[in-house]
Length: 190
Length: 255
Image 1 (cartoon, rainbow over the protein chains, first blue to last red):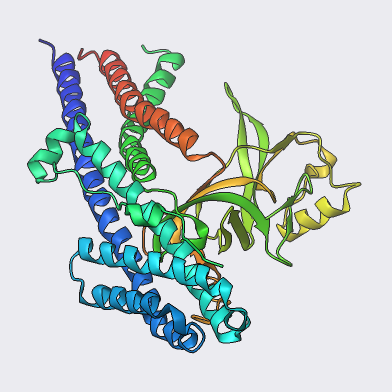
Image 2 (cartoon, rainbow over the protein chains, first blue to last red):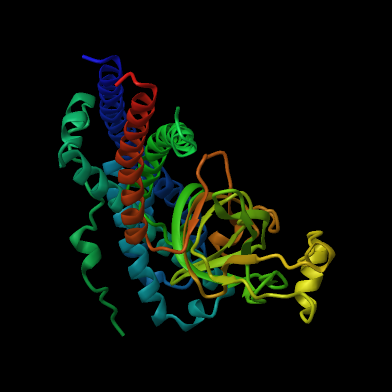
């Protein structure tokens, strides 16, 4: 065979080999970045959970004097805060987060029954701050679920599934689920 | 003896071979970018976290930071221009770029949850051509005259002889929809922690992450575009190199 033809065939093989290696490297790097996205997006939720956790004692102190008849609600909120403080795993933190979100939702709804509390400057500020954090938290939970969804789709698609299995990443991740209690309407008695 | 045409073909083939290899490796860069765009979920501006983020929204100019595009005098927050001259060699007629530049201003990107300050400096900006003209003349256009002076350029030919010039302009105008993948970092205009909302403390900029990409396509179109580029780069680059290499070998008589 002529030298030229042999050389062209060899260069073709080099292109194919480089292409295949490059493609699999891009899958590997993609899976690593997806995995890190999930961890980062959870860490970003955690930052906001801590901020909200730090605001709770101030909120409890500001409402204590006004809603004496809602002692049970304040106890629930304090218990939920303690549960968050003691939570270590992601699942425990998520459960405590749900309890706090639910108790806060009830507290803000109940506050409508207390005009003096509603007019309190300090309470209004804390309510705005915590509501802002709640909104950001809901965005970040959504972002977390998007990250998990993309990871789960990728590790189950061909050819990524082959690389994911070799990397030990074949196990789908769990979404951040809103508990049933949070989906229920808050009952407010007038 | 080889003719001039064959000599030219050899030169083009050598360039084609090198360009094909460049395209092939560029294909991997596009593949990497495509994967990043696909992998990164879009953040809502209200809840942006520090680090590499992907956002999509509408351009709102920052107060006092509106620019005028140089040739069409369009309101914008970023523009890129090229001035090309028609040149003729023995066998070729082509447009040569004789002047080019870009300018950007701070702007806000706004979605349905909030807005965030953006500094387009050092971004790779992927926007289509907005304006093209071969008939612009600075004689009766004061704005254009001032712009030419600022870039030290004259559109008059040597001793009054005519030059064929082409003016190209790309810009990002207010209300344009933009896709941005960049770093959410500290906003240097707001003291840490004093922003009245989360995104007020943040500015989108070029960070330690290598990527800072701005496009006027939405994510779906961008992924489709990058897919085409990746395919074209990897397969087109390899094919071009192989064809050119074969031509070189045929010319050298070793095939």
